[in-house]
Length: 384
Image 1 (tube, helix red, strand yellow):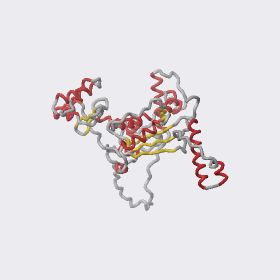
Image 2: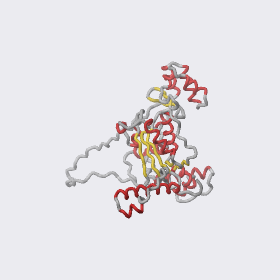
Image 3: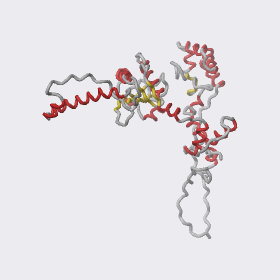
Image 4: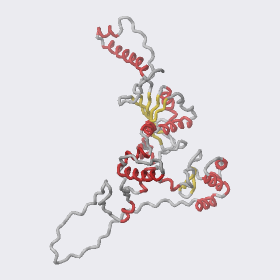
């Protein structure tokens, strides 16, 4: 296809050629005769001609998105897939609901709101695989937001049912998220301009960069209304995996504590207890891990699981990689106020409304009431 084409015009595949109408039954004759049946035929013919002409107007664009049972490409599955033919608000779309064989993770359900019961009676992926593949076969441009995840999850479904992967060779993949990153730079100087209001000199010297980073973070906390959040909350917002890091065995997510056992976080045996895997017929997987170029601590744990009995391994793991589950946050305790004896000589008391909680300032934090020492220690005020 040559020339500059608009990405905003999409049309379905070309319709079959329309056979010429018999003499006297063409659009003009039908309009003159004003017959109801003739008008219907004219509408069909006109629509078919419009489709044939519009096909040459531009590439065929499909925007798509998946909802899944979770984020693990091996274990989790697609439960909803929507495609939209074009970019405009008037573009047509199609949605498939798919019944998985895996359970929906609570975290995923909290995001997309789809429950297991909502999928009762829906087809399995194998039943809709052909229809979905046909859509991607006929498109020129595939658009999504953080689209690599959606493509990986969709391709995993075809692998799971023993079908060839979607052939995306020659397709133009457009990720709106990556495009945003590329077109709006995220360097420290750009961040300083946006969140502090000016540039800064001596960029890329260590001392200037750390000072600028402090000012940028302070500006971000104000701009995103995070001034009153504690560092734990801010760290979780920066890194969605922050809360789960406490359960990692070592510095990576390859292994993690799950209750009292160490489980794998990757591969075809993901979520399997390491000591049980070592005692079963698939222990060769752990030998394979030991021989490969995994992080040192991963090989060490797998080797220990192969060499020790189950209980001995768990005792060794608890000593070598101790894990303390995070304690739940204590419930707030209302302050106890000692009763004050009435003074007989004092005038009669006037009833007043109980004081309201002080309003937290969204500005520089001055004048914020400290409800308790615990609250003041966990709150965050940006540096001046």
